[in-house]
Structures are given as structure tokens and as C-alpha cells.
Image (cartoon, rainbow, N blue to C red):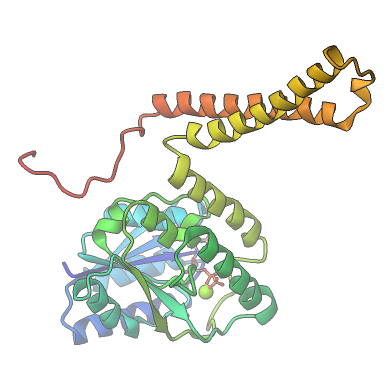
Length: 315
Ligand code: UDP
Ligand code: MG
């Protein structure tokens, strides 16, 4: 199968018929073999009924329905496990992303061998103050932290993947915004972007408000930390802890020397004394955190979970 189109949706009943028939049209024109996997993320409108009806008319339409709303990341992760296509394309259900981009995205994955191609909404049609401006900031921070400097728009719902990528990453929480970062950490670094057309939301309202940025930033820290030190926490905490400890230790030795050898008094009134004690304690704490982290990492059943590209002579 050429393409799996993955569509997470929450209360998008009005958009679905138009979206699905548009995708069908594009697929037929280009002779793609395909499937559409719609994930109903706990809709309270009749989205699921519409998916059921559409799938009766078209065998390529498949659906997953969550018992409740788990969020976009959970919807994507679940659909990724189920895909059969060589190329996986995700798009939002609200008709803001255009299915006409599919052939070009497909060819960038298949011909140019990109692992991931992210859409770039060069011109956006969302609220300037609550959406566009915060997005600029978000994208800048993510670029700096992740080192992926060639993406302008990390959170675009329209993305294409080599299916290998989606089978080997894990997203949860609010991490759908950072899939390129997660993919990079999993070893899929051939990442690029394609400017895409963005439409105004035709029906319904946005499901994400301003609060998304606080959780989002913490997720970015987690991803970076887990990617870099998740399997070797001691390398971060151990180094910081040891440095801090020795810094304090040297100060305290100097204090003891002043008091005992030079006979100075009033050590407890000197700021340096407290700094010495503080850094020794903080250093010990950091070291312990690293050590505990290391013990947990050792016992984790994912400790030897490496993303193996290929094996030879093994079944
Ligand atoms: N969505 C979802 N679960 C959620 C929130 C959103 O599946 O908990 C879907 C939503 O139906 C849409 C896509 O994720 O298909 C993007 O959401 P939205 O258009 O509201 O975000 P925006 O474009 O405003 O950033
Ligand atoms: Mg939208």
C-alpha cells in the first residue's frame, strides 16, 4: 500500500464528508493505493456515525474510536500502530490542511528519501494574537533546543513520514508538537519542510487554546532530557553534583584553614561559609538524583530498547 492518511479528530462532523471525498479524489487521480485511518478522539457530536457511513461506501476508510478524549498525541500514536502504507501522512480534520499536498509530500518521502517532511503554513489564517505570535516564539525555542534549524513550523498538522519512523517513535501527552524532535532522537534525521497552503477553519472551533504553551514547553524539556540523558542520567547529575560538591569542599577547607591555622574567628558570619555548605549539600543531592536515576534506568525494561535499523541472519 502506498499511503496511509491518519486523521485525528474531535468534534469535526461538519468537515468530514468534504475532507474524505477530497482525499479520495486526490488518491484516485494519482492512482495511489491507500487507506484513511480516522481516529475519533472522544467526539460528542456525530463524527463517528459519519465515519461509519463513509466507510460503508469506501473500503479504504478505517476508524478507531476512543472511549473518551485522550488528546491528539494519543490519537496519532494509536493510528501509527495500525498503519499499513509505505508513507504515512497526518492531517487535521478541520479542512485547514489541503489534501492536494499529498502527491508532492509522497514523492519527497519516496523519491528524495526524507524520513519526515513537515508542512509549513507560510501564510496562516488563525487568530494573530493567540495563535500566530505564540507560534513564532514556540518554533524559535524548539529550533534552538532541538538543533533542528531547518523547520519553521514544528506543529503543522500536515506531515509525511516514512512508515519506519512512525513505527519507531512513541508520543504521548502533548508531544505531537515535537514529533520532528522525537524522530531526530530516534535516529531519523533526514527532516525537511514543504510550504503548504493553509485555509481558514471552515466549520467548528479550534480545540487548542493558549494554555498549550505551558505544557508544551515542559514536554520539550522532557523530550530533550530523555533523548540526551534518559539512558545515562549519571552523566548529567553526576557531573553537576561532583562539581558543586568540590567547589563547596574547597571553600570549607579554606574556612577550616583560616580558623584552625590562622586563628581567625567569626566563620559563621561570613557569606562564603554558607555558600560552601550550600554547594556541598546541593552537590550531594544532585549526585544522589543521578545515582537513583541510574538505578531506575537499569531496572527499566526499556533500557536496552534501541532502535535497530536492520539485522542480518536473524529472524
Ligand atoms: N484534535 C484531536 N483531539 C484533541 C484536540 C484536537 O483529535 O484533543 C484534532 C482536531 O479535531 C483537529 C486537529 O486535532 O483535527 C487539530 O486541532 P485544531 O484544528 O483544533 O487545532 P489548531 O488548528 O487550532 O491548532
Ligand atoms: Mg485547525
